Image (cartoon, rainbow, N blue to C red; front, side, top):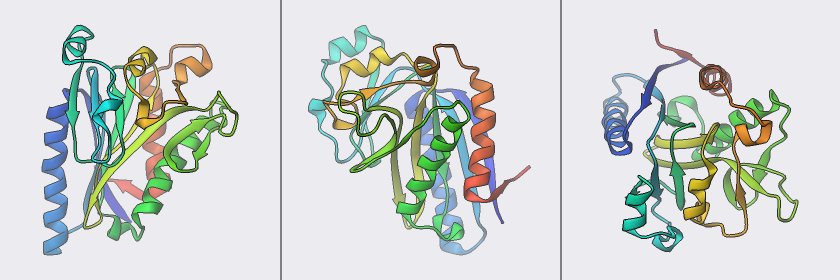
Length: 226
């Protein structure tokens, strides 16, 4: 069974977390290339207000100017994951798995499916039915109901030689207003929601993190390295 090092790095600047991811990514890659072990990492964090644009994204999906970004106390980065534009901010759990997928015996497609499955399983515990949307990654509510489809969790990953980085952003107590400044993930006809919005109450972030930590180990069948 694979061993994973878990870290909750708290509220952290996006670029600082990105640099840390790159450092761990290189470490996992080096282990893989030299056959010196199979160590993996799972990072949980939150970010101050930031918009990130993936490799395939369009800058025009950020709907505000640099000046407006400053006014709303947000930053912007063009980054090396897949997908289009998304928002990260306080009250959102951002998860960065840095895994060697070959050690788990799964493909990149299966990996993304598992990330979605973790969130779907988690939401079931809150009696919230969620699912996948054809042609889009992430986890959605009211799929197929025109005018009501809304995303609760965005997924954007990068993989090189089957080693992953970046990951998912799950809206818990997120200020949804910040999504109004972008076309989330490039969509102009779909909404965004949060667990707080769906339940009508403030959610305990620590409880959510504990539950997600367990679901990751269950879905990927690994142990946490103590």
